Image (cartoon, rainbow, N blue to C red; front, side):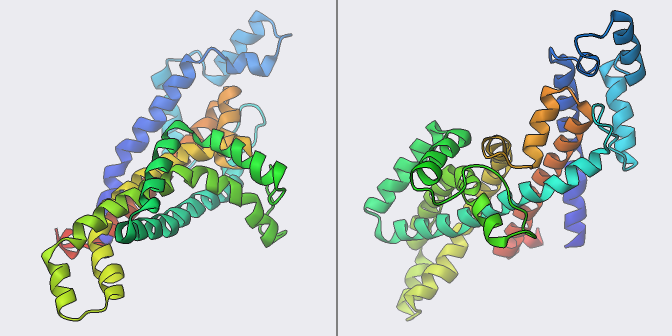
Length: 313
């Protein structure tokens, strides 16, 4: 198990390098300029040139990235060019907010998505048609648009939940949960339908197999057949879709955090990109890359748990 985890993590290193390099290059191509942002409108051309030289912005992009990468390998993500605060100190307090949304999205997708998929496979009817409609609607409605609709309905009209803001768990557990309900549902709206659809198709395929008929002929309880045998055999493609959904949910959290004014990694990354604060942006990108690696690792380990043949190979 440890060897498998180590091997998967080793294979993920190129992903982190590519993601951080692309982010660095794209930021260098942006029309905004960090030196101009720091100096403001009153800065002279001489001050601008001197500040660019001091920050190392006059060097080639690959040289700048190499200097950042060398420090990052040593465990130093640098400091914000604007606030002079350490990047680690800016990212770590916000990590919990983003992780709370991601974990909530995963729980909603697994519980509701699997339940709807199983019910749809067993009964079909309007539930199956509703899942298909939700899948199509979700493709046309991005997370931030769904978030705005949820705010209008549940915060403005019904006044059940807060529209914006975040409450710390230590301050009020109930307030913390209420502040996360709408963000989680906004990100999970499309994934739930996709998970349910994949579960339904997998269950329909497994329930037609010979071993299911043999189990029923042997007198095994229908509940055990559905939840223990059929669902487990249908779960491999569902886990694959869930992994893709959760990686896609990372980008969803970026927009949702802005809409709901949540102090997460996504909102910090957007602010850093707007201000050309490359140190903070690179740190946030690295954290998002690590989240993607962790999701892929959990998917691989789930394969081994669901199918021993995968674990052996």
